[in-house]
Amino acid sequence: MLKTLTDKDIQKYAHQIVLKNIGLNGQKKILTSKVFILGMGGLGSPVSLYLTAAGIGTLGIADYDKIELSNLQRQIIYNQKNINKPKVEIAKKKLLSINPKLKINIYKKKITKVNIDKIIKEYDVIVDGSDNFKTKYLINESCIKNKKTLITAALRGFEAQITVIKGWLKSNNNPCYNCIFPKNNKEIKNENYLDCGIIGGIAGIAGSIQSVEVIKNILGIGKSLTGELIIIDLLYNRFKKIKFKKNKKCKICK
Ligand SMILES: [Zn+2]
Image (cartoon, rainbow, N blue to C red; front, top):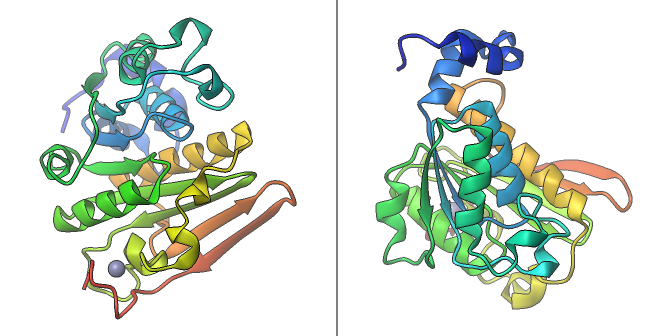
């Protein structure tokens, strides 16, 4: 852990340090923590901005896409001048302008079962900012194998779902992603499930919640969202939380 904070750091993070659950020691821990974000779209934008602003020490960001005009409606880290440029390169510049001390690793490639384990091993907490089930199952399996906390979220229309997965833990209260959303579920099998339009603000809310869960999990404060799924429906202002247990038939986290 860092021995001391500079005066500038104390000033910069004063509003966090003053919180009794964080304090100087908590801020030191944040400054040395390593977080990986898979997907730099609607979720990755707010998550990376808030984590950088909070002083996370090392961020890994992965995305192989280029910025398109239609992204700007919700991917708030990019602007009109960035069209056709690689997302991770533009995001890196933007994040370093917020915190020049940030160590940032960019992965401008598709994350697959061949390369995911090696990348994930380098980080303390993993954030799922992907928009497809294939990637969500892949990242879930790798996080279980490598015993990493996964902060996952999904978006659809005016709705968001967020949960925290510690699936490698054997207790019943630690379901994995596959326990909650089994692969053979009919609705999930429909590949277009997540690809049906979205209101920008819901990505901001879900990403903000993910960023706070990252910090809570790094510091071990409050109550983690493990075993619980937050469901938000902004069209009807419905907010609910559903508890989940391990699925005894789950082949991934047994
Ligand atoms: Zn499971």
